[in-house]
Amino acid sequence: MPLQTFDNLPEDKRQRIIDCAVDEFAQHDYASASISKIVAKAGIAKGSLYQYFNDKTDLYTYLLDLVSQTKAKMMAKAFRQENRMPFFESLLALFSVMASFELQYPKLAKIGYKATSGKSPLPEDLLIKGKQATIQYFVTLINQGKATGEIRPDIDAEIAAFIFVSALSEMGNFVSMKTGIDKNIEDSGKPTPAQLSEIERLYQQVIMILKNGIAN
Image (cartoon, helix red, strand yellow):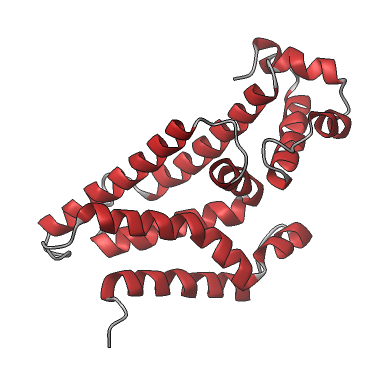
């Protein structure tokens, strides 16, 4: 986590350093990301960065925390306690939040993905623990669906949760591939109406398949 000296920086300088770090770690995994490129782009001395963060891992951990906090805020806004929805509506809303996160913060989304799929300093047990926590979230959601009669009682909640988590973890890449969303965001900062329509269709298809299966 950043040192107090980082918090004491003027807001514009602090944000410039964050933006440059996000750019670099979105393009490269932890092992190949360059601190030299970050400081050069931010217009600061390399030694200055180590007055703000202990080391490269400290900066990287800060960015991962930024990813988690940003995603958590979006989920909290979408899933208020008073807005209890049926199971598959909740699932579609959750997928929509993930899609919105990918669209609004594509670079942060890439950092999060590279942390779990690329060369990362995160210990394997920490990665496994994070995935298990996500699976447990879905297990709880599925068991609630069983209690309301929306989900068959013979469904293995843990296996179903694993399928949901796997779908979620890869959906961002699939959506980018199908819509060309990455290039568009870099060019204009937002997806086109046609791309938004296609994204909605893709997520609805996923929900339909999860809900009804593929048997004729």
